[in-house]
Image (cartoon, one colour):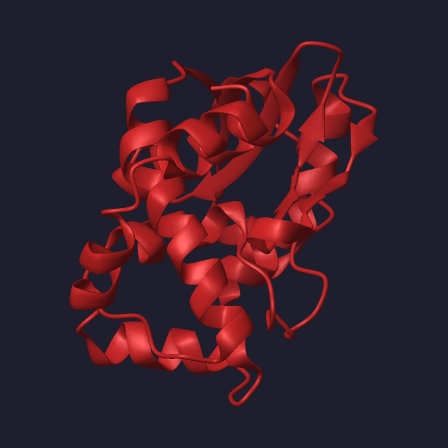
Length: 202
């Protein structure tokens, strides 16, 4: 759930696609300015507002009572907000139009949520109708709920994601702009993967 516009100083699970993407784009530079607290995004689309409105209602409908827990790993500037969870599984709600697809960005987000919690993760999809975009209080229709279990990928977490996260966290503390060249130099440090694996129990 989106709580406020201020995303400065922390990386969220939903930022994973940006962390794993191309750092030489205007989109990344604008995102980095948000992390530095120099720029704030106030974008609020109809889809975002409807998703926020229906998230808790879908979770309640499927029997998930624990919602909105936040987990922080301060040293890595990682702040993970969970939609809902029970004892063993995270439920990440995605509302959509048309057919649902587990995108690469959704998959990556779930990987980080599993890393932060040690739990399994599933995406709970809910297809919204045009009427529901206009009225956030219509009853939930069980036939439009889908469940998409996501398998944890430790190879991705340890060798792809965590090194980038650690490097970006350092750049954020020093208020530097991350670069491919800087990351390449930083990643030559031979012990960093072992340290990361011990810290996160990967």
